[in-house]
Length: 166
Image (cartoon, rainbow, N blue to C red; front, side, top):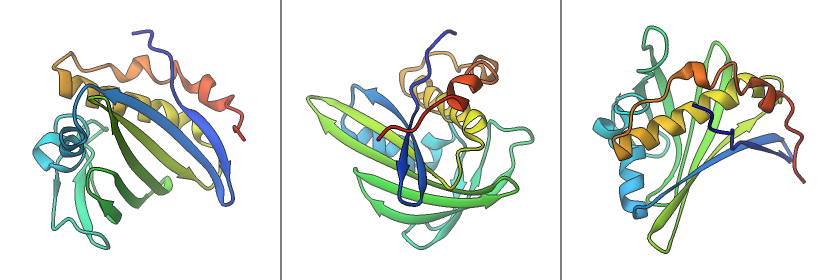
């Protein structure tokens, strides 16, 4: 696969935002279900369990990572069909992300925003999100799952060299 990376980096008052997007020919309701229903997230990211609500923590399995570990994922905000903000902490640090949906003319754009405290790991993080967003696309349209080797290390230099946009 020779798909070009889509990620962009924007400076904020507290660090930088890594932003990646995909557009789906589907209503926001259907894309939202792909992001929030455990049987659908299992197809591209991993299943989850627990009582999902803002301020609560659920357990998510990273089904496509080595050893498919389970981790705690806190739901920081949930505005159905529009915005889901989550955070988790692991051995790599704290991950703060938002999934933002906007629908127009029969299509829905999904923007994944990872709020970075530092840009040091953009070369590792960016290719991973490109991969997962393409996993979501494959799960939605029935195409073959992508191979992570096509993303990392192939896209690492692109993300390492991103210069923040004003």
